Image (cartoon, rainbow, N blue to C red; front, side, top):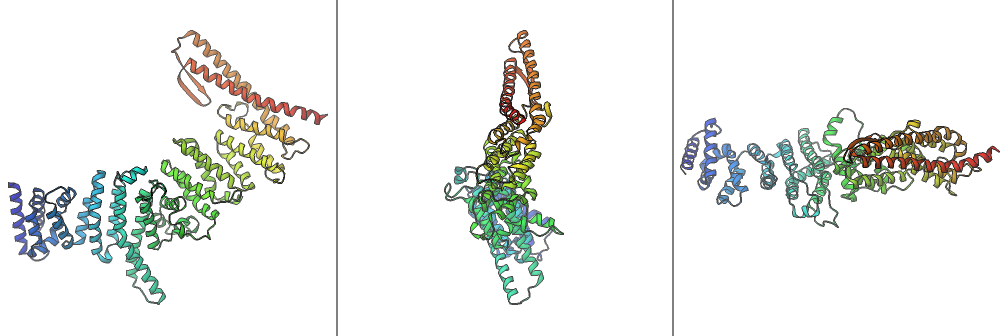
Amino acid sequence: METAGMALEQLSDVVQRCQALPEDSYTAEDHNVFTVAGRTCIEEGDTAQVLSIVLDEQNQEIVRCMGWNLLPPLIQVLLNKDNRNLPQCLAIFNHLLKTCRPKELLIGLLELLEQDDPVTIAESLHLLLTPLQKVLLCLGDRKASSLGMTLSSVLDQVAKLPIPHTKEQEEDDVFSLCRCCTDLTAFVRPFVLEVKQNLMNDELSESTNKLTIGQDIDKEEELRTELLKFCMKSLGHPLLEAHLKDPDTLPVSPLRTFASEIMNTLSAIGEPLTSLVYQPLLRRKQVLGFLEEEVCYPKESLASLSHLVFVHHLAADTFPCVFSPVFSLRCNMEHICLLLSRTEETRIQKGLELYEKSLVRVEDSSLTADLLEIKSFLTVPQNLLKVMTLCPRNDLRTKGLKVFQLSVDKFDTEAKYNFFQYMLKTSKHSGLEGYIIKNIKNQIEFALKPGNSNTWFQGAHLLPLLRKVFILPDGPETDLLQYLDRVMESLNLLRYLVIRDKVTENQTGIWTELYKLEDTFMKPLRVGVNMSRAHYERELHTTDTKKNRAKESSKFSLSVGDEKLPNVTSESQIQALHSALHTFDMIESVLVRIEELVDPVEKSVAS
């Protein structure tokens, strides 16, 4: 109490001394004594006396110059709603907002925004956004840069809050992010309305041939740019990180509402959503200034915007029907490519969703081969391959395969042919190569049906593709376990061809190519099977011998394919070896069946 009494006395003394001084002539010591003494009084509970000093008419110039220094303890009391001095502190705070210089208030309030605890972050934002809005509005046409600084600080704080992922988390707002987004929407509204009005006035000036002062236009554009940056940053976080719930799942969704507000804001400040979504095709040539364009229109933010439009159908009614599904797909391919190239599961999931929604609007077999000359149409499948093989989540791997097949179905015959060639050449993954070969078989089967004849999966065009199928990457020394999927699908395709395509018709050209395949594919494969079987039989014999000499707990190391399996028991080792031998038997079995089908035909032709 003695400390508080001394502080109150010091505060009264410095205020009394400053009353006699001219405006803005207070010394650094005056500022320091006022700050320390005033803060101590508030912290110690002498808020009634501080309120009396602050409201005194004779002290208004002092409050205008130095009052903002009292903000930190005031905010602490306001955050602690149970404090008995809350009414007096609220009165002091409101008076400071009306009296102090806006720039100093802005600095003080922004400093108080910086928090680390999620609960405190949410409470601070809820308390300070309205005062910050009032301060910024007091800056008049000088507020653009200050608004930008404020929005950046606020979004940095929002980024520290966890994202609600479940319906229950969003309903209960367990992390307070939803309330912060709602508060943020209310915070920017007057600035958005100002920009919208400025744009309308500019249009009116143009229509009436009135000249607008260039400096005013620059300030208006600066304010518009800061709001654009805010929208773009919000599209990146939290909206790209969040999984929005459909209205059927969650009728009232604060996050979905926030997304809609961001899109409305973009439209209001002169950024048509169609131009933003279709920017990959509509953008200007990248000449001088392209760096500034990337800063204003981050690619991830534009991808997030496209996801909101095409997956969640937000603002879909604003899009003209003139844009075809193929045009929309072309634009979205760059967004999809970006999202699927990331490792974060939220981005991968949104990339898959956007790709699927873009594809389902396109008619089957309608995408022409010239689209494969566009880089993204070849890069996206490569990114999909990484998702299907490397993504930790099984549901995303499964979804990736589903979307991959959907993309294949949308290509026309020539495009499918070229796409299969490209994937066989570049994939370097046995599983996907096997899947492509299975697709090739389906296309040949379709082409051989009456009325479906085409030049790409029959005759002369088909043979170059088949030559890419019926090949062993490393000849007889190919690791048959590693390339099992590809080898088995190749054999299944070859068996299908010699059964389905009669030698007298030879629609696929397989019978004229068969003698080459015997030398380049079938014989090397048989040699490879025999070599691999002999190797694994030796391994099995060696393991059996070691097992008989050692205890069951003895451990060995085994390599299957390129993978080393360390520290396995002899029983596990033997089981793996038997499994490999069974695989070779399976390959040989199909190979024998093909030879049994081919040999009689070749003999009859020869005779």
